[in-house]
Amino acid sequence: MSTSSRHDLVASLAFDDRGLVPAIAQQEGTGEVLMMAWMNAESLRLTLETGWATYWSRSRGELWRKGETSGHLQRVLAVHADCDADTLLLTVDQTGPACHTGTRSCFTDRLLAEPAAPAGDQAGDQAEGAGR
View 1 (cartoon, rainbow, N blue to C red):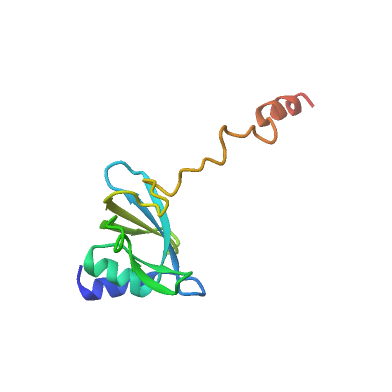
View 2 (cartoon, rainbow, N blue to C red):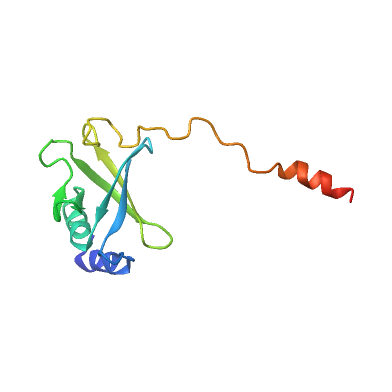
């Protein structure tokens, strides 16, 4: 990707008031969602230039290359912006676990075990109202 193309992509994004966009990392080939982190313009530029995922740490207030200390790197194969240009999807080749807890994905805690029942039985409501 040329420098002007990288600049155009970064300039087209709708960063929040802190200059950040959420970035979702998804494993190439399987589609598994691995993690969500934040990117600012500089981390996105570095990611596009190097091909390695670089994020912005809100807690430390600094850039961090994913896996730089652990060796669990993310090679970035593609970057997509959503329809509002305020969220990024990174297609990556993840080495080792993506989560700092040591799991493959940060999304291991299931909050909804079974789908909730609809608030109203719309089919039944329509049938009842049909004879009125």
